[in-house]
Structures are given as structure tokens and as C-alpha cells.
Length: 207
Image 1: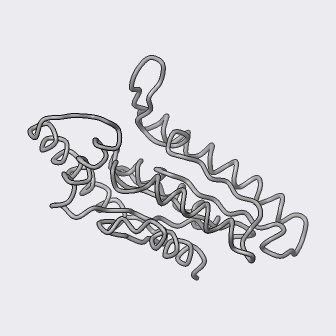
Image 2: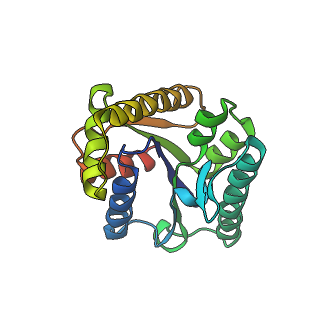
């Protein structure tokens, strides 16, 4: 495991990933005993579906697996360097990693776990956290996001979006129940992002 630990933050749109992501970075940075070195990559560096100049582009299974392997190789090289220097304190040479939409996103999209990816994540001390919304609250969260973004949609459009999100969330739940990586499911109905971030940081530090 070496000097590395971290979290793969997963979930559907509107589940609070971005808000929790920001809070984790803030709280981690305030911790005196925490690592000074941090890698925090948002979903655009690791997700399956990406918005480009040409529109939405969805990576196929092999391309996305290659992307995940590249991101893990980057962390492994840094971890190997830290280990090669000998013993040290967490603050000085430890590495905290935060990925948004990473491995569970792959399983939810392709229904194909990777033993190799899971073994590498376990060796690096990476854990999965899935943020969920109660089924009957998904539509409300969509309305809230629309209001924040100045988007106006019909009730039918929101209902259809909520149905799609619910199906996506079920795939994420099925995925997290299949992995060998230490995992945690957090319901985010309360939208208490700071509390969730505290729980996740404690989880990342547990054995």
C-alpha cells in the first residue's frame, strides 16, 4: 500500500458529487496530520461520457479501461517513488487521491468488473464511496439543479429524467455490491455536504 490512500467518489448526476468533492478537498487541507500532497481529479478526467467540441462522446469499454489504467499508473509511479525514499511521515510524503466517477462508473456502464483494476486500487489504498438519493427525492433534486442553472423544463421531462437517473442509480448500487474494494454508500437527501465529507475522510483513514 505504501504512502497512498484515497477515495473514488461515485454516483448519478444530482447526487452531490461535486459538492462533496469540494468539501473533501477543503476539510483535508485543513487537517494538520493529513498529507500535503494531493491528487484530486474531477469526473472529466475519468468518466465514460464526455462533452467535447464535437458534442457528447462516449468511450467504449476498452478505451475507458485504458483511461482508468493510465490514471492508476500515474498514482502507482508516485507511490513507488515515495516508497523508494524510505520511511517518512504521512504529512511529508503521503499522497491523498480523490477521483470523481472512476471505477464504479465503468461497471455501471459496461457491467464488466476488472480484477486487475480492483487489485491495483486495493494495493493503493483506494476506496469506493457511492452517493445516492432516495427514489422519491430524485425529481426534487433535478428541479433544484434546474433552478440553480436557470433551466425550465416540463413536468413530463423531469419525470423522464428522474426515471433515467433511478435506473442509473440502480446500476451503481449493483456495481458497488460486486467489487472487492472497501466501499461505503451514503444517502445524500439531507444535502449536508460537510458531514458527508467528514464521514468519507474518516472512512478513507480506516483499516
